[in-house]
Image (tube, rainbow, N blue to C red; front, side, top):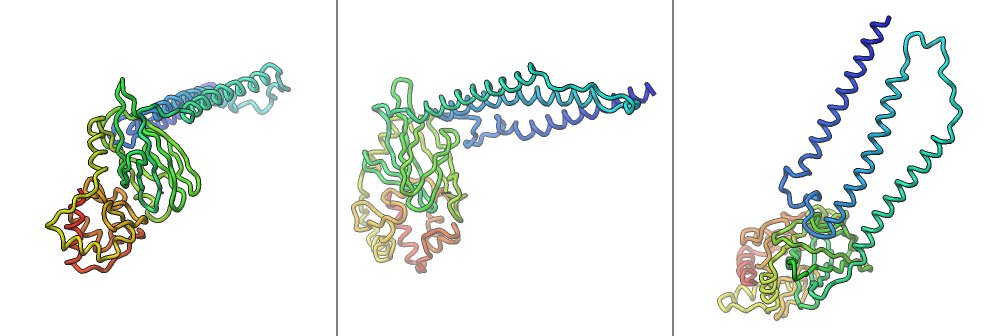
Length: 354
Ligand code: CUA
């Protein structure tokens, strides 16, 4: 009798140890890639800018407090299950009858209230700190307008309009140049999310939201629309190009210039302006003043096409013009039924928009 009880206890202990190891193994299998093994630039565990850094610190603190609570509660639960489990011969005796304990009840009422209160204070301090940040003198102001399924990017103070690729300067120790964004929507709700820079902020029709970030390391950082906005929501990609202050200023000067009209593409130019391209697209300094699609004034300065879906190459431009629906099903640019010659001519013209 004594022996079998002892064996049972051992089996139970082995089961618990096994279950715990399995839990750790599976848990770490999922967590580890996120903590550093992948170099994905959308890794929320590798913030590269305020406020993402601040958000990470707060969430780790909250996670730590919750983990301690979980371990204490689960530990007590496992202890009670093992220590007071049913044993042979228990049938005859009745367990001790406890009718409440003021001390214990007071403790498990007051302690959680204190914990929740601390967590509320910590999170609201972070939220207030992020929301109330004022733009310093060197800040870059941009307006981002969400469209199905691309991003219109305006720099009202600099007189620049572009799409999908947001250029910002890197802040350096003595010269802080955070980017302050106004977020608007032209159609449905979208959400601007560059995980390494800041939390998500929605772009809502008829309402202007604001956000900011302050990257310090030059490079290209990826983001996504984070609010379901229709068929091509998943392919509404953001690129933030962080440049050294000098590179950024050069980019600004280039973008501010009107396109120079290359003389050797007169025919190609004609093909563009003879088609309905001009109804939807703007090319500054020409009669093309459409507002529905992306501004093409400096199209060739962008890395990607179609809201970040394909690289900006002559072949992809050709495929796109022949039938945009093949590359991005449901996109709002229709198949213009152009001949191969027209497509080639328009591509030749677009390639002069440097
Ligand atoms: Cu825009 Cu999802």
